[in-house]
Image (cartoon, rainbow, N blue to C red; front, side, top):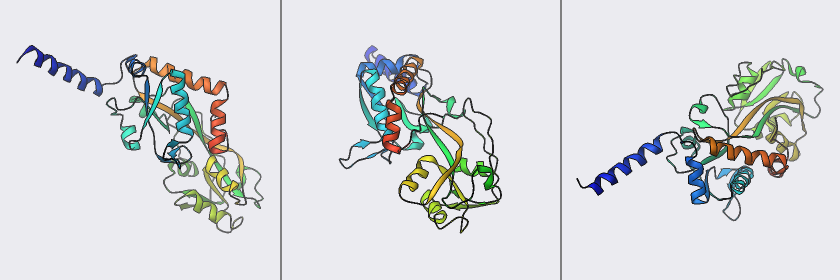
Length: 277
């Protein structure tokens, strides 16, 4: 085999191996700066977070936050939309540099990813009818509570067996004990039954704060009871091992928090500030 063929084969092998390994310190940042472009994996079907607008362009909270990170890095931004299962598998092979999508930074995921910054908190709340006499969360003891099938965290909270497996989790306090739990396909169906009246079909529902405020804004005669039951953090994700790149992203999000940009974006897209715990 000629030297040129050997060199080409060796280069190809190195390329394959390098994409299979965690990022080396500075490697991804160097690549982004050299290309003058940050490639971001996100979704195209998640209103109001990341979705295609009327111009068939990606828009939403996640998109604007990613653009803010790119601006801080002094580069342009390109979006790609692989499936969420592909993103969380961690086998990116250099196809994108960073993932948006409020990934929960669990301890299992931390084996594959670094999480430079938490930029969003999904706060789960209890919602009651406006006519409810409940004034505190413990008033829901023994009551009929609506839950969304597939919302594993809310269901586990209602059953008092929720495990918070992300870093720096705080001790969890269960603020009430349901008497009966009923499952629904989505928050809209939960709210439809609750709006019929206090105790007609449900006494309360557990849902995320953004969804709760959405149905209330739509005219449903409901209100949030008490403080959030528990917050779930959402983080930016990158492949493990590039501290320089991680630090740059962390600095970008800190800057957006410090100057109020992150809060304004959350209020713009969700109607509430969900950027602080």
